[in-house]
Image (cartoon, rainbow, N blue to C red; front, side, top):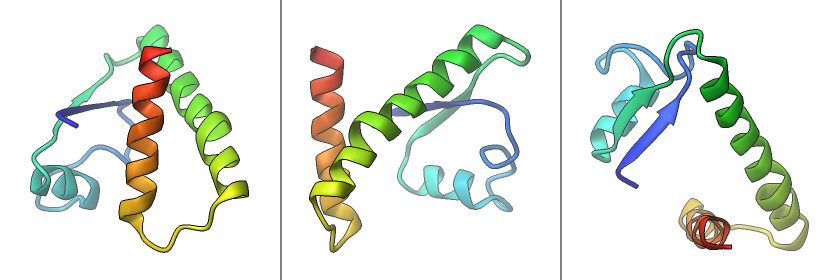
Length: 87
């Protein structure tokens, strides 16, 4: 992943030195961009994508598989994202 797009909620924004999420993105070298402020179309698209991931990946996957570590979950999510973007 090269870049992540989030809204401007406080759980995603802050100074790198003081905010865990920003620090994590800096460590793994992922650019972080935000939706335009008060731009409802972008925020709606982002929320709908998060809802899609929840309903079509997490809820299905967690019923069928028990993960022992985060790497295997990330691998399955990455594969699902490729499938989602192609199909």
